[in-house]
Each structure stands twice: as structure tokens, then as C-alpha cells.
Image (cartoon, rainbow, N blue to C red; front, side, top):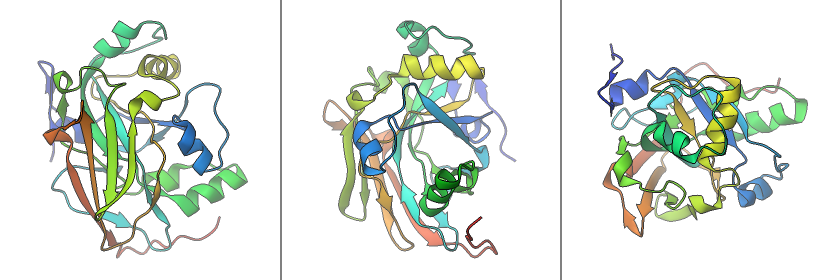
Length: 242
């Protein structure tokens, strides 16, 4: 069994797998809001993914449930290193000091399930929560990303670039994100915060491979490189309208 290891300021892949919670920011890039025909939020909007959705490097492929329109969403992930509660949004130093390290993530989404939930006012849990629906990169040392608001995120499906944008385009920056979350729920060491996805989200099907990464000042980070395949589920689950 994977054990929880989070000591001496060192995040391990074991500690990632046993995070207390995963909090995800939605609609944090204007062009992404437009492409999904969603409303622009007046304040950070967030939801959670289960820790059982985490897929670590080398653990296999993303599994597409039967009947699901599977979409990718590349995002910068923050790995929290200290307790954060009722953080002042103006406290940029406090927010950045709370980050232990980073990772790249792909927030897999059952888009047809999500669209139905949005239309009917139902929760999104199913659309975001399947096993393997959160592939993560290796842990990225904090020193490798001097300014998380000035990096480039990209995602390719096979050899075609689908997403490629700067985190400078975030509508709500990290201090505001952590502030709003921490006013509702205390962030604890090991928690993971996904900061939103830029434009270009779309479908991926079994047999295809997603490649994702981060560039800092034009240079690619080795720890952030991801290559994740997709395969069809063999489970008994089949999507049906609620």
C-alpha cells in the first residue's frame, strides 16, 4: 500500500497519491469560457475531484468509460506545503510560501455527463471523478518555476497541438485562488489545487496519446513532460442520461 510521506519539505509521488483533497478552479481563462459557452465568474469558482482519480506517471492509461465523450484539460497544479486558512487575497507572499511544489495535470472530463449536469442543475462529480481522470506529472521543484504566472502550458494529442497558452492569462491569480478556497475549507499539507485550463479543450479517444508539458522562458521542464494513452473501459459502467 502506498504510504503518506510528507516531511522535511519534500513532496513524493507517494504523498501525491494520498492527498487529503483536490480542489479545482473552473473557468479561469477567458477564451476557455467562450469556447464552452459558459458564464464568466465574478469570483473564483471551484469544485473537487476525488483522490482516487489520480493517475501517477507509469501507472498506465486514462480509461474512457463506455458512452463518455472524454475531454482533456491541461492545468498547472499547486501542491500545498502548509496549512492555509482565511488567507488574505492581497497576501501574495503568504500564498506563494504556502506552495510546496508544482505538477502538471490533465483534468479529464466526461463532457456529455458534465453538460447534462449543467443543464439540469446537478453536481459535476461523475463527470470529473472516474478513476484515472487526473493524470499528473512528476513533482516539479518550486525552484524550477520562479513565477507560476509566467509559464507556458501545452497539450498535444498525438502530434497535433491542442492547447498552448501562458498562465499570464489567468483571470484569478494564485493568491486570490488560495484566498477564496481557504475561506471555505482549510487547505492542508499535501492538498492539490488545479488552477484552471486555457482554451483548446477537446475530445480524445482510445488509441490516442496525450503529450503535455510546461515551458519556462521557452525552456521545457523535464519533470513536467507527460505522455498518457487512452483506452476503453471494460467495466460494467455505461453512461445514461439521468
